[in-house]
Image (cartoon, rainbow, N blue to C red; front, side, top):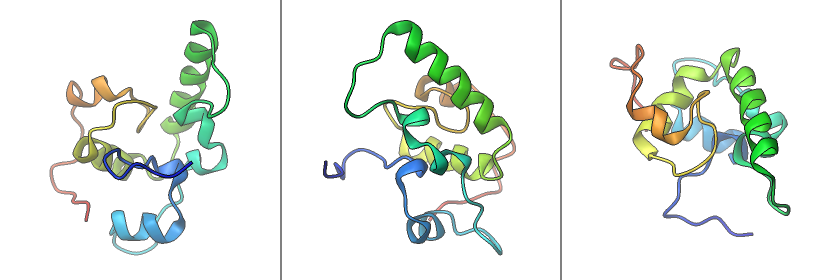
Amino acid sequence: MAHNPNRPLHPARMSLADLETVWQSNGETPLPECTYDPELHTGPRLTIESTEERAAREAVAREVCATCPALLLCELYARQARPASGIWAGRMPAELTTHTTELEDMEVA
């Protein structure tokens, strides 16, 4: 499946080179926890999940995000990219506009 350039690419699906480009952090680029199980954060590609399965998957994805070393970078990227689906920095896309964190001084390329 080809990537739609009009939709933001979830960090779980980015290569390390993409992460380094998008997240120009000082020093070493943190590897997001979601890269180990992309479908946990983006949803299954080939199957349809029930409402209960989706809620359970999203709850686990939020837990994984809570301890991710790339949490703040992911949130900043998601706020700028404005995704339509998935779990980004432990939040659903609609939640990204209602919560604020210490992101004012950070930038994404």
